[in-house]
Amino acid sequence: MAQLRLNDVTREQIIVVENRSKRPKDYKSYEVVERVSYKESCPFCVGNEEMTPPEVLRIDDPWNVRVVENKFPILNNEGEVTGYHYVVIEGRDHSKNIHEMEVDDFEKVVKAFIEVSRILYQKEGVKYVQVFKNYKKEAGASLEHPHSQIIAINRMPDRIKGLIEMEKQFYEKHGECLTCSKIKDEIINKERIVYLDECFLIFCPYASIFPYEMAVVPIRHRSSLLSLNESDIKALSRVLHFAIKSLIENVGDVAYNMFFEFIKDEVEYHHYQIRICPRISIHAGFELATGFYTNVVSPETAARVLRGQD
Ligand SMILES: [Zn+2]
Ligand SMILES: [Zn+2]
Image (cartoon, rainbow, N blue to C red; front, top):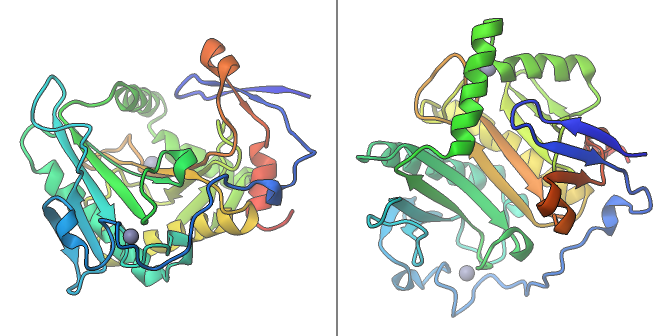
């Protein structure tokens, strides 16, 4: 039986219709990747550093994480929309992905995300910084070597602007941050919780567009990643690593997008979050034409599976 759910912030309409014939482990990526720790032709591999554009940041020496300019940037300093486009090389090994890394190594990646975001927000004209990861081809990755991307842009994207506007309105009306209020509801409801501790909540949003979509939010109100200290970064890395591992271990080695929604300053109305969107189903003709999204795994089922209970 189909159910219609509305995202009260983005106004997206989602048709949840469970496809019970498919078990989680049936999901496989179509991409076949050769597992090697080094590839001669890979610009991100150790020893091939000369093949990348200039380095923006490196963590450790010899390096464990490098941030370099993107060879084919979406944005540069010319045109109506300008900005910066960087690539975060997440490790030395050609095939070791986040879920296979030690948490301490992943922490270096998160540190690089935050450090580079700080640098970018100090540059003239930068209005918004987007940190994101495309894992596997189906999610948009064009290179195998584990990497993420950071794009800084000279205008606030309309989607983010709209989101912040809704958050402001909610705050004015209720005297509370929208996400803080959602967190309380999710904790009471329990059904969509994947993980909860005193610092973080991982849950499957009520109006998820994607099967097994997850939101990672800090329990304590915070708008930006820029003000995180060492121990905050450690805690965030641990919970993100856990979220990604939960997906891969319980659903399969599937493609996903991960993106960070945070702003530059601390404000009462905006709460940072990280979204993980597995790319198991394809939004096709019906979705493009109508604006309805169909999700074949309800967020309640998704949370149960991601908790390892199904
Ligand atoms: Zn490589
Ligand atoms: Zn909040």
